[in-house]
Length: 417
Image 1 (cartoon, rainbow, N blue to C red):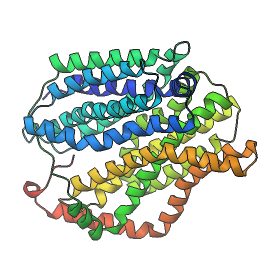
Image 2: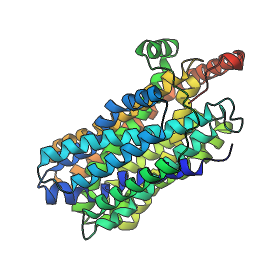
Image 3: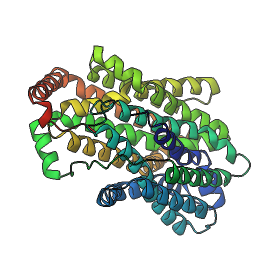
């Protein structure tokens, strides 16, 4: 089977509108709609709530009708309309409501594009990709790259902050048309249904599963801080225009995307846990430092190293959850891993604004934001320090789970997604 170039391209393009609008959040929410930092937090959190609630619905409907492409195309057009509608609304409550449904629509697109990749990888007749994880790895990398490339495109909003919304809407229409006429369904392979009882069994079997779950929650939680409070700090305190802001925020996303595959390769020699701990420590330290300086190149360096740390631990943290799961419960474990990450991303912006208020009320102005930045950085550092005492026990659990999987015949195993 040939490489699915169309599918991978659509995954990349569908992520551009999501991050393209991040650099103009301040212009839209605070300047145009006269909102506060709380509304900025809600703007970044509420689409994640829509995604969280509607992701299972997208999968169930698509599986029920045994079709991906038509649903992808339809929700591209719906999402494009909602992106455009956001430019026409002047009432904050209605604006946030539409943003909620935009997030719900977008998860249909992303979720079903990823499901299309999983269909190919779970097809026993597809000897090139079946059960190897290669295609899902490449798809995940281009998903991240799409988000990274979208950030600098925020420069489109330097003179007109609505322009990224218009361009994002146009991109979604294009993705919908290409999906409709070029994307091919290769047979729908249903995922194993997620059940809380299965997750409970997985955790009872290996309580150390909490470790990758907590890392993913904190990782995404801190990203919520970056795209909300840190975003506003760069715009208002350091006076960055949307283009420069996009470049600086992209410094975190680009290394994370580009280092995904190399870190997976390195983990074969080092193991995944050392990379998770080292990467998280680097990420936490330099995330904290990033809020302490207004020097252009020093901030550039801090964020770049922060992104390198994220790239080192991003894929290994997923691999850690997968490797620690008992055979037959991998799909349940990874679904929970993803859901917990989404919950962290949803809560991060709201908590960051709340903590920002606390620090401003109790510290001198010049120390309040550095304290906030270090608060989020120390969450990563603290989790690393709490994990180190259990290092050998976690490695032992990984070896037990891997031994169990090797002892089970391939015919009875469940393909990883």
